[in-house]
Length: 246
Length: 281
Image 1 (cartoon, each protein chain N blue to C red):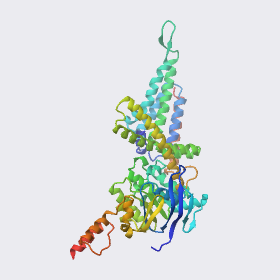
Image 2 (image 1 turned 120 degrees about the horizontal axis):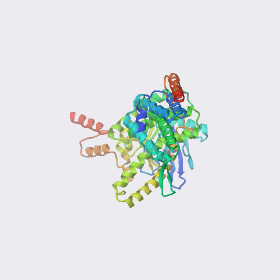
Image 3 (image 1 turned 90 degrees about the vertical axis):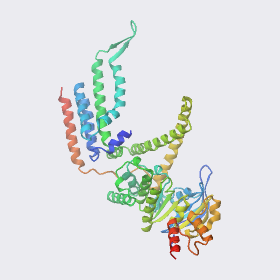
Image 4 (image 1 turned 135 degrees about the vertical axis):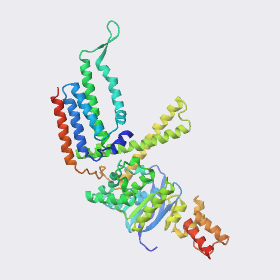
């Protein structure tokens, strides 16, 4: 999470409008699904990865680290599409007819979708994304939950760290049994903290005259219109390329 | 000393839903343009007092007046009250909503219904006032505790209140951060803002305030100008505070005939100056 945060706030495309980045990512996602063959979809994925590495200048190491969990999940699930277990005459694994092609399609589309999402999320801070969703007329209640949830992630992760440190200092994790007990009390303590924090935030909101949706001054992106045109053109080009390439 | 009262409490009592006492017949008034410190042991009712000032809770008995007029708890009147009385909470993480500094500071002005350009100007001005302009585009969770406190103050400043209430603003700050914060408050006070602060730091209270209110068990134990503060030794000792170190040292020096007939200085720098002047004669 902190890797996403770090790069979202410190990349070369930080000042590029979220609309432009969102449009290109969406087109990239569309291109992956429009591709007629897995090979073309892999090609689109490669383009999206290169754009992320060369445009916002996300280091390859960081990119691989944030992509690793999703790729690991894919690596675990792809074999189940290729192989199946036959029980007649003793259990034996065999390759499903058409399984390889299906697996290649799923792999290409999933990794393409991942690349498109990483392009957006590694180059755009969450607050800009929430502002973008507000402009796209997402329901206010969803945006409020996102705003508070995102902020609370950091507040509560700090609280978790403090509690775990305090528990460890009093031998709370010195044996598996004690570790289970400590984890239980950590979860219970966090529940109370969540309740207290929500009460405090409510009072804080009221004290600053809020009685409805959480509204903020949105960041300005000079040249947003031009950037959106360029990204939409590039994105459409990518989709056309994906569709016509054999 | 003759400036009018900005906020007045008349016999205000409040009990929390769990039955615990918040305030018990609390009567006091805050002077316009003053620097007031609210002292009291934990559970004395300081935070409850502040929540009343901002209209976040209503008295169970008694009344709160602003400018001599009882508070109206209707929606529009509360909106007006909260734009005049800003409250900075003790824990910055309980106040900061947005993950972005600029966004969070804009929260209050946006709620006031101001137009975009005015909000933008106020946000820049408030961040500048607390020395956080360079951090406007930083994420809140990457700031230090002291920086978060300053963003909280900016968030309230951007609403341009005439009274700013700070609940233990120096708690958890190192000496440098405390000095920076006090410098910010000094500037705001010089611009005419009424500042009310809760603290447990007696030396800070004595050096900074013009007026002191001491709360005990939900009621006002005493309210006096800061010059008379060391005279409250008995009460301060009973509450476990003791008198400010500089006043204690001044008394001991006076008792030994080193200092005579001089006013009690407010801080050690003042005492040092006094001693230098004495030795020059």
